[in-house]
Image (cartoon, rainbow over all chains, first blue to last red; front, side, top):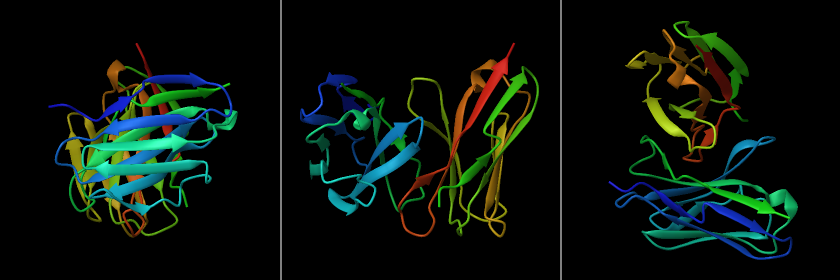
Length: 114
Length: 109
């Protein structure tokens, strides 16, 4: 079975540019999560969706960050404009059910903002 | 609010045992455990749903003390493949998920 698929795996761009990260969850999963991981702050939940609807975006650091889930098989996380402090590994995860099911993570996108 | 894990890091020899603790300042409704190898994504190990519940997977087991708002992960007869960072994940009420501070574990031959 295909797992959670993220793209790109690596992204290097200059400060001020727009960055779009993409995620395809596991088919049939109704929850989708976006996380950011850094050495300083660990693994942080940015936003999560249930049935394509954003439920909690209180972890989104600033208005520069936005996330969408136009359908059950695709989600994007956009940063505009990007800043060096946004450099991190961004993970997408999906799960099925009422919240007592494991989360399946994608391989992550390693983002470097110069 | 973030669950605190202890120890922060531990080094073991193959065959030795380890215990990783996860403590929350808020009531826990379930606890998940994940392992993340360097440069890879976190991988689910197990979930504990009820206070007092214990589970095991191979030589890795866990317990959940709901009253103390704690969970512990037990690694028995550690193997080289156990190396990585272990995270507990909790749901303090809503489905907003919070991961613990992490414990780096290194198993030496």
